[in-house]
Image (cartoon, rainbow, N blue to C red):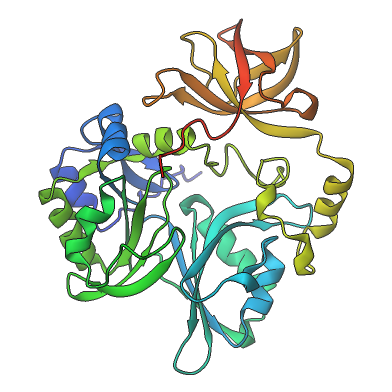
Length: 371
């Protein structure tokens, strides 16, 4: 019998740069990625107060081109993509027939190319890249579109924080100031073609920048010299949780619908047919049985992923994500609970190492930046 030999972990073009900065590495979705550089709390606070940068090159990057392509994409998601004008983007979810979430992603509409074909970018999670690509190609008419997977050919950097634009602007030809949230454009970055979007996963202002690897390495080093703090997956997780942004595989998955996950604002039932529509229509009519809520622990104990949630001594749900909030100074968590227990102010308990500790349901997000 041949023993199982683990596959080598993939590395982004910025791996050696991370090693040179003494980053602590970890396995993530088949990739060897930095979990922290100078420390999770320090990196977290840098993003909240000034600017931090993340290597997110492991994420999936798809370019789709086709005639009236939006008509095909509409079937894949519950959001109305036809509302988008060139330069606009939509955070949304791919759904299965049961309205379970295959993945969350962002579609970017770039408008028409020289041949009159619609151009769309899609950025998906690293862990679901192959699943998403397979699903999309199964559902789309491949004879009517071109699908390019740029996942391994391009670097993706996230520059986030109140000073992110100030630090990024000197290296970008276009003026970034007028770009609205979820706006995007193509412009030269360090003299080379790049794609920039005012999106992110931290609850702060900032841009995600897609460029060729050599440009990405030079941009990283230039931002580092300008004082931008390198950040790893650890700070990325605490930042997104404070902003109550879902993590696929923990807070949302193929068994959760967008209505259960608090993503009802993504569901546009007036747009026409899409995969999973009938289930969402039924849930809209009858109400959901459970909801993803925010929790604030009432003591110093931290609720972690998988911890059971109790009410009146009976198990009623489970924590999906939890941490000690560096910004707020107390423990926060996301958890699925029965809809009847989902209103802010509801007292519940979380089981931690065999004992129950008090928590209260609070409004999401836990943190919202000043506009």
